[in-house]
Length: 136
Image (cartoon, rainbow, N blue to C red; front, side, top):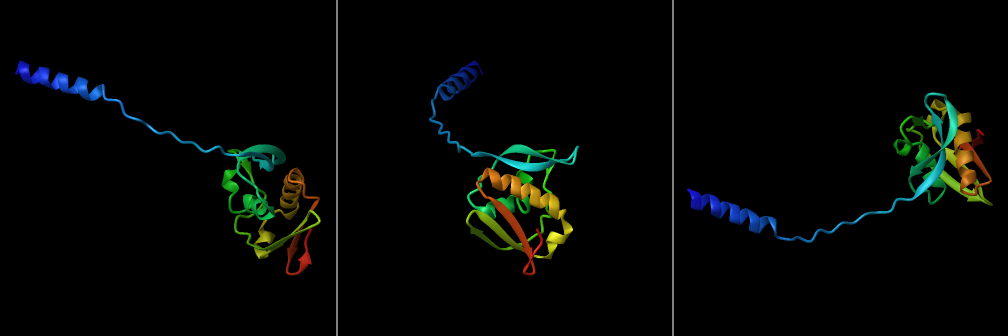
């Protein structure tokens, strides 16, 4: 019995002393400033998120489909069901063509969030178009 105990102890020492190479990789996530509504005050505030905004479509999708990337305690003024039918940038002015779900949102607050964040991305103005009519 003692021999078995010593054999197990020796085996454990041999196994524990083995070195293994462990590879660690990480991804550097870009942080960006955006505007979102603070839930407790209902005011638009600048926040930092880990998200990449490469173009005007990414900006729109941030406030609709990907609003869960906003920090806890902050919300988007947009309804997540809004579909972006088309987007166009002319002379740093953005034109978003959307569907009827835009009417379920606070359009003014949504436009303000888009505009303030858009200015951080060098967009001069942002316009929202519904049924070929400019809403804002």
